[in-house]
Length: 334
Image 1 (cartoon, one colour):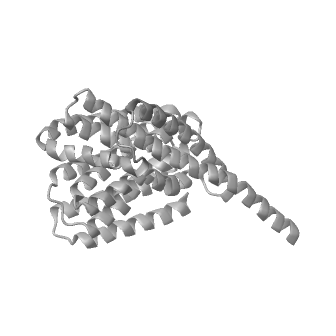
Image 2 (image 1 turned 180 degrees about the vertical axis):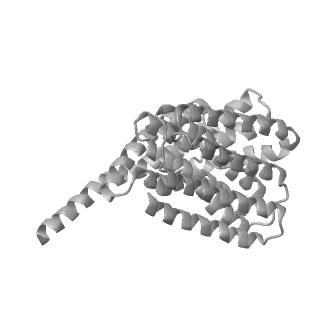
Image 3 (image 1 turned 180 degrees about the horizontal axis):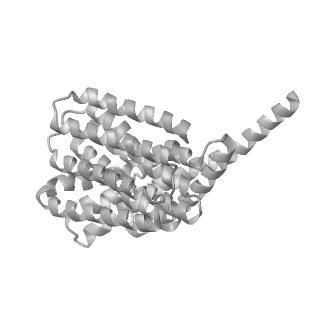
């Protein structure tokens, strides 16, 4: 009996290793692919003389969310919508709970709060919309279309309002360009090659990431949504994590703050909407309400930072504590 238990344990570990390797490589491919694709798209936009406000408010923000959007789409097409669903809801939790919390603790007070406050309000409205749509039967194809439309409305309003904030949005564009050196030391690379390679890496990496997640979830006895919510969501948030630390080092917290909430809006509108359109996304009611509630708490804490005199460091610690408590509870719920 003991020998059977030992051999079974060895067999499980043997199965875990190749899938874990595929999972890690696929996650890296998704992150690097999104970085290359986003940077080349930004360069293309400048070469076509598109307005800087358009580049800063749409292309860059959209690019940082490409991993979640692609994973949501691929997982929906492959009938594993739980993977995308967990990633979509987990990524904003990392962005706002963990990274914005760190930003408040280690950065000076924000000087430009208009872009930041508007984005938080949109984020809370989007959560309310998801809650209303969930009263039907999860996120259906119709619900997915509604969320994507709301995402475009957000973009449109950002473009209109951003005309008076062009210098700030230009900073957002510039900070994204500076992250290029993290993955490549070349400064004068060919945009078209990086665009193609980035697209291939992003889509192929997402495909293998979804499949390896399914196998790993079965091996370790966790649900796919939990793996997506805790592990993949953290991995796909690496671009935002790098942006946050870059903002802290360069003493530009407003850039990171706006991007963290902006990227989160893309997650719960475009990414979640795509997941719903392809196959429909259904999270159990307890998990869904808990997640929406946790994200709403993070958004409210953000508003407290803007409109009250609470200590930023206290609010930052509260955000991080909310993040940690949320992933522990969700892991048990899932």
